[in-house]
Length: 126
Image (cartoon, rainbow, N blue to C red; front, side, top):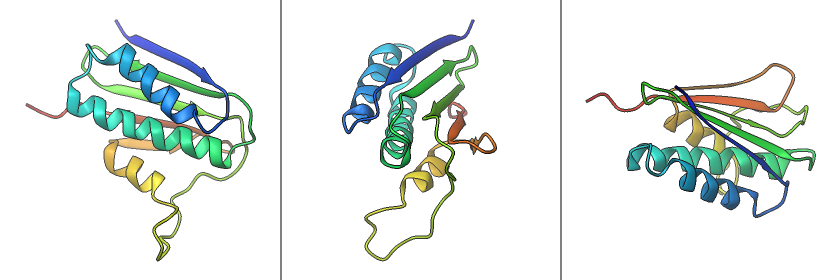
């Protein structure tokens, strides 16, 4: 059985915090604290990117928690821009979000021609 979380967010500055709070509330008893922490950071970065760079339309967040403990998530903002890791700037004020996502997930990508990002995370091996 797969547990699914679906959240629709307005594209506004509070969206990332709202997403984080809802994911934490729905998964806190089902995901180990270290993995939940990483998931919340990934969700925060992707939703923040959608708010900052998206078209201002509703943002959809979907998370599936699989029986093996793995997580697959998607963030979609209905945009058509390019999603890619950007060059680092000297001031470190911008451009770190997808680097963080790349570090904390096992895999992530973008559906071609969209700003629909998916990611996968596996629980740490025991």
